Each structure stands twice: as structure tokens, then as C-alpha cells.
Length: 377
Image (cartoon, rainbow, N blue to C red; front, side, top):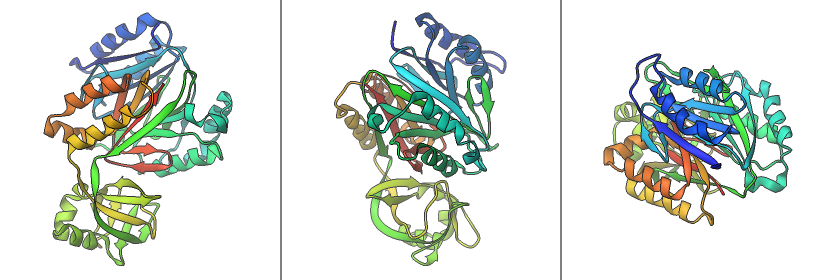
């Protein structure tokens, strides 16, 4: 029996038809009952796939999210279905945080129950991880991360996650657990690797310009920055870029900032500019925190650094879980390196599946324009 299998299909189908699922299920069904299935798909067929996975694997935990790009060691496409089934060598405990857009901490007991189910201790931080998929409601990622941080207390449990991709123009996204589809929830799995370590790697697709500044007036709840260095946020950012404020307002996603904590840069992308020149970001920027203006890095170098980090893990992964920003795949597609990068991952990361959504989460941080991966020995 294989320890894990990745399956992928990008077959075209109309609403109600499930050719892609048939392809994937045929690949996964001949190896016994999976312990855990992780899947991603396009928005239109997500609910069908979620129900079918639960129907076919009723004894398995099945975790999924809507994704801009579905990719794995078997292929990639912006439509269809990608899945990874793990049959041995892990233990897992799954759950749901309801009301993720408002008050997920009310449901923190679900996280604590999963931790208790696995009997997680501080001595095994290098072979435990938590994987979470969060619906993109109310810019809620920090609320979800705070819930995980509070629930785990002093336990060191690495976290990897993604905000589910939205259906364009609707603001709606999907996550699911065991056949149930959610639009205002976070679904999660705590995973113990029985066969060795779990290592996390990350890489930013934007680099520092060296132009640093400070957030001096912030509303953290709404993720709104009113001023940088005591100047209106958009005015200050425009002065650093060398453009007018209307240009920043029109192309705000092209001018992210890096929040600097413990010398690590976490990317925050602007979502809109207010009439008062405030900027709403996709990730929280905290008052009197240090930031730096970012600029696009060369995608070839970015991909190369990511692969180099895989080479330096110290072990060959049996399988991996990847999280990439949807924006990254747009850049990779524009430069024609998507296929090459997906192939390099397949060579270095073992059997893997990946998701591509609105934001990425690593540890206690919510970020964008970042490539993440959890490698299982």
C-alpha cells in the first residue's frame, strides 16, 4: 500500500457533471481507506466534490477549499479538482470554527478537543502541524489565528493555512469538512507525522526596497491604516513610490508593504484607498509597527530560492502540503514558469497537493503574496 497518493483532473464539465471527480476517485480508491483527504477545486463544482468525497470515503476525514489554481505533483489548472489522500504514517484530528467572520473564539473548544484527542505535547513540535482553511468573510484571518493561539496555549504547534479563493464578483468562498460546505467557517486538521519530522518553508514574491516607515494611526479591527509617519497613509506611500495618490488608489495591489517583526517581513497588500487617504489592508498592520515598501522580485529567483530551501531540508519529503497566493500564479503564468515550477516541486517535495487563495497564514501571521509549504518526512 502506498503511503499517500496525489490525484488531479482538469476535465471540462458542466454543472451537475463530475468527470473530474471520477478521474480522481479512480486514482485514490484502489489503495484502501485514507486517513485524511485534502482537496481543492474550482468554485462551481466544489459542493458536488465535497459531498462525493464524503460519500465514497465515509470513514475518512476530508478537508477542502475553493482554490484559484488547483495543483499537485500530478498537474495544475484553474479548473477541475486536485486531491491528496494519506493512507498511513499519520494521526489527525479535525474540527470547525463557526462564525469565523465575527467570533470564532466562541468555538475554541473544537480546537482544544482536537489537541486533546491527539495528546499533543510540547516535546513533539517538529512532527505536529495544524492545517486550516478559512472562508474569506469579513477579513477574519486574525480572529481565526487568535483563536488557535489561545487554544494551544504554551504548546508549540506550527500552523499552515490559506484563505479560500472567492468566486469573482461575489465575495463568496467555500471550505468544507466531511461533506459539509461552509461559507463563514474555518475548517482545520491537526496532523502528527508518525514517520519523522514536519518542516515549514516560506518565500516572499516581493522584496524590500529599503524604504522603511512606521504605522502611526491604525484601526486594527478594520485593518485600516490612517497614517504612516504621521502623514495620510496613501500620501506617504505615493511619495515613496513616486506617483500620485490616484495612481496608488487605482493600483493598490501592486504596491504592498512588508510588516517587520523580529527581522521577518510579512507582506500586506492594500485593498482600497479611502477619501481621507487611508488604506485598508488585507492583513492587520499594528500601531507603531515598522514597515517597508516592497517591490516585485524576479519570479525565477523567487521560485529558485523556494526550491533551494526544499533541497536544504535535510530529508527527502514523503509528501507535502503547499499554499500559494493566487497572485503568485498570475505572475508565474505571465512569465511562463508555472509548469516548470510545478514540475520542480514534484521532484523535490514528494507527492504533494497545493491550494491557492486570497491570503496565506503561517504560525500567528496572516500575509499575502507568499509561498508556503509543509514537508513531511
